[in-house]
Length: 387
Image (tube, rainbow, N blue to C red; front, side, top):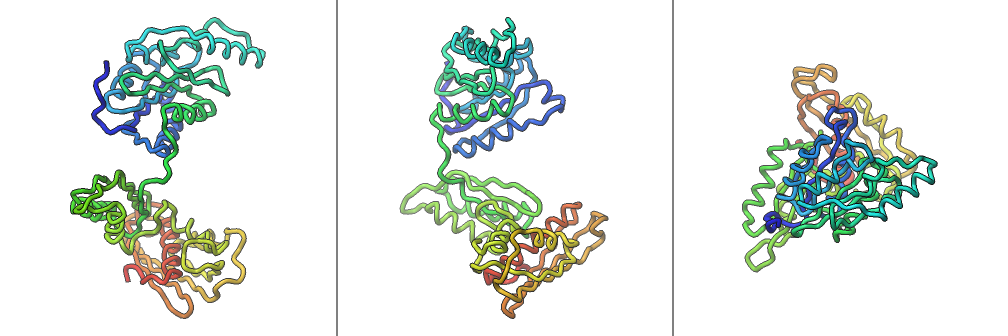
C-alpha cells in the first residue's frame, strides 16, 4: 500500500513514452501541452520524464512519480504492437494483474470495421488494462485510456497521438475532480532588470513576510523576466494578506512592469493602436509617427502591419528610437546596446533609456518591445525609464 503523500496535493508527474522521442525523431509536444493544461486546472507539474518503450523503464518512472505526485500522467505506448507495453508497466508498478475489458474490445472492433480495416489478433492488447481501471473512451482512435487509483493517487494512461490524447486528457482531469482554475497565479512581466535582480527584489519581499506561504518562479524570455507567485498568505492580525503581498511585490518592481497578464508590450500596444480598447490611459485609436533606427525598422514594420490602421485619434505622437552599439553591432553580437526612445505626446516628451547585452539577432526584437513599452509609458503619463 502506498504511503500518504508528503507533498501538497494537486501535483503531477508527466511521463511521455516512446523510443522516437528519445531519438529526437519527433518533438514532445504532448508533454508541453499536458503541463499547460495541468497548470490551467490548478495542478502543479513537479517533474516530466521521457522514457523508452521498455516495461522496466516505464514502471520505474511511474514508481518515481507515485512517490512525489498526486497525479501521474503516462502518455504513449497504448497501441496494438509488441512495443506498446505501457499498460503492463503500469500494472507492474502498482502490483496489479491485467484483465481484458470487453467494452474496450467492442469499441476497437467497431472502429476498425467502420474504417474497413481487418481486426488483427494483436489489437486485443488494446482491451487489456490493470485490474480495477476506470476506462477512458477514445473518440478518435482505437487506443482507449484508463485511470487507476491507489493510495489517494491517480495514474492516468493516454495514447500518444495528440488528436486522441489531448481531448481525453480534459476528460481525465474532470474524472479526478480537477476543474479549470478561476484565475492564474499573480504574475508580472518585467523589462529593464536582469533576472537575478528581479529575483532578489521579490525574494526580499517574501523573506520579509514570514506569514506569506508563497513562493515565486522566475523565467527569462528575452527581453523579459516573468515572475509568477505561487501559493498565498495566511490571514491573521499579524500576517500580510495576499493582496498586500502583491502590492509589496509591485512596489519592488515599480518602473519595470510591462504587464500583469503575461502580454508583451507590443501585444498591449496593439490594442491601443487598432481599437483604443487597450489598458493604457488613452481610449482612442493611437496614431504614431515613427523614426526607428534602433530596431532597424522592426518596430515600424510591425506598426505598419497592424490592421485596421488607426484613423483619427490623438495626433502628434512622435516616436524616435535610436541605439548606440558598444563593442559590437546588430550583426556582430558582443558588447551591449544603449537604447533610447523619445515619445512626444501633446507637446510633452518622455524619454526612456535601457542598456541591454547584445546577445544575438533577437536583440532587435527586444528593441522593438522596448519601443512599444516606451510608447505605453508615455500614453499612461508615466515618467521616463532610466532617464
